[in-house]
Amino acid sequence: MSVRVVARIRPLLDKELDKDIIVKPDSAESGKPYTIVKIPNPKNEAEDFSFAFNSVYDQSTSQETLFTSEVAPHVKSLFQGYDVTIFAYGVTGTGKTHTMRGGLKLAERGVIPRLLSSVFRRGKKIMKDTEGNTTVRVALSYYEIYNDKVFDLLEPPEKRTPSGLPLRAEASGKTVVAGLSERACEDLKDFEKLYIEANNNRVTAATKLNAHSSRSHAILRVKLTQTTGDAVRESTASAIDLAGSEDNRRTDNGKERLIESAAINKSLFVLSQCIEAISRGDKRIPYRESKMTRILSLGQNNGITIMILNLAPMKSYHLDTLSSLNVSSRAKRI
Ligand code: ADP
Ligand code: MG
Image 1 (cartoon, rainbow, N blue to C red):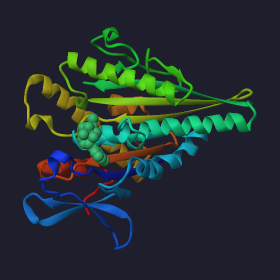
Image 2: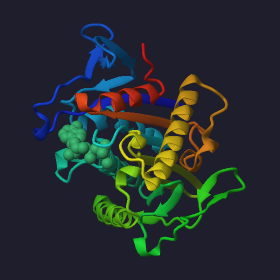
Image 3: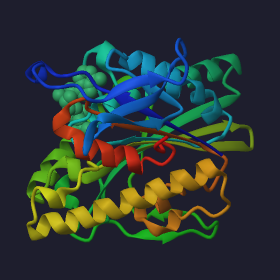
């Protein structure tokens, strides 16, 4: 079981070019790759706080570089039967969706389409190399967790029940989402059609619930099944665009928002506790304490977890950025 916690600092957008940059990458030793994020102490701006990561990606990092460095190496492990879980964590507006989904242009594609593309390519190669003795199948599920309720994104919003889908404990001890749909996917075209449709479900449904997508966790599950004769090997890649980590109570104290904030804060807190426990090598990981970590069985197998902390560089995000740096486990202040 392994975990990597990395940070990605986004560039200023065109409309932000007049803003102060206060979040900066740094190296432990000059000439070495970035592993540190520096940010001023808001109470004494002459002083910097430093946070350590496994790796830090600066504003010039392309989608391809991030994927090649952090995700591509684990595709092989996925085919060997290990589960791979990738989170994008951070304040709303810092680049979580950009990192996971990305843009439509080839170069702008995020982790998710690149992962799928890589899985399809490898799957086809295995089938060719084994002359069809091994079959590789890919099936997708896509759901969101909003206010601690699970909603299927592969189903139209009209089919949602207010209470969401129930969880069920299986004999193996695993928790599954009862009634979650699963669609077979043959290639990237198939995937993209499904993914665009499902993301539209997210937006439509969210508007009806009078909420914004930044208040829910979106979880894509890629189930890989490799069959050779009687032998079946199953593994799962999960890619999660998390709800915004900002403290919503500070900006809006309506009742709805308070309920949302409580649910978001709790699940992000449990998630960070799990990541911390895994990185310490603890036996006991508090994954049962939130719905998301329970469904993901976080840290319950010998899988690989990658947490990408997205950061905006500007001063206007100062306090939220500092709190997300503080929370993201391994990113301990040093
Ligand atoms: P979040 O999902 O965390 O709320 P978004 O992914 O929507 O944030 O990003 C906010 C804005 O910043 C979007 O316009 C997005 O295109 C842009 N952006 C984020 N990261 C980058 C990046 N690395 N390079 C260029 N633009 C980015
Ligand atoms: Mg987003």
